[in-house]
Length: 363
Image (tube, rainbow, N blue to C red; front, top):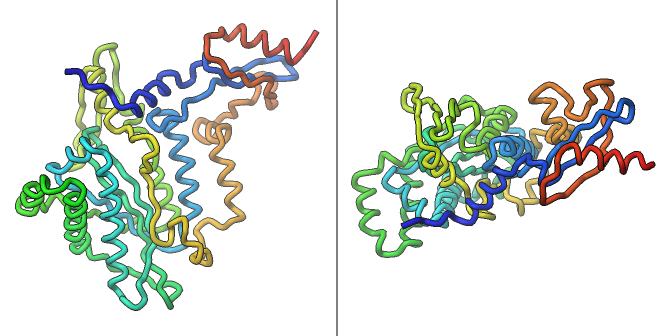
């Protein structure tokens, strides 16, 4: 029986296939000095696209850096046993349980430090559904402040994180959330996990990356990046795709060769449902926590306009590839935009050039 792809898969694949296709329009630039022309097609802006996903990652990293307070942070990764992963693949609404379990466990750990103060940290959670091998492996990357605000105390430093508590509490919280959502049918699985699979609940930390600027750069690699970068794809012969990855356990290089359809299936399973938020802010980083606005931020307000400028298409190209995309290659002056064309049928570039100049230089 053929399984129909999810609507979000159809939409994102269609976007990616047509990314950069001049048939769907773009911007025409022209040099007013020498007459040189350049057509820049529209991009798809899909996170699934290897090209557009990178720019999305840059923009999200910049937005996240504005929220960070000037304090050390701890980066934790919450994983689940292999025996539970298929539940989240078959019912993607269960992915919300991962977020709620991590949130409740971390907030409870800080609140229990002083029940009268009820300390609240800052948390940024990012969902990943893939590992290096591209197999389905949902887990949460959580950035936590090494400090918190209390009812009376403006800021208290927390250097010690109990990973045993985090692992055990995360296990209990997640299984209870899933039991609540799936009902009595999950009871046997829950008992099996408690008996045989507790080692699969693992909390990993990177204590050596505590500086907010380093953390923002590190997390940028996980915010919206494509499932696989183009540099990891070694060959495509029309029928088979060859890619590589370094195995997480021992960093050994693994080369995989798959039929193109199987490769696409691996990638497509990681496309999120439309509207699903894979990045969530909790604690003092939550959107409704205006009373924490007095905390000193890692990026001062006066520097933010400059950083936002670097996320624009032109500046991102210059930073990544070392050239200005709208600088005339002949006379080295900035090209002017002549026309923006929205199209849904094919035009040759020659036709686009002639029409653009006809409008720019009427007879």
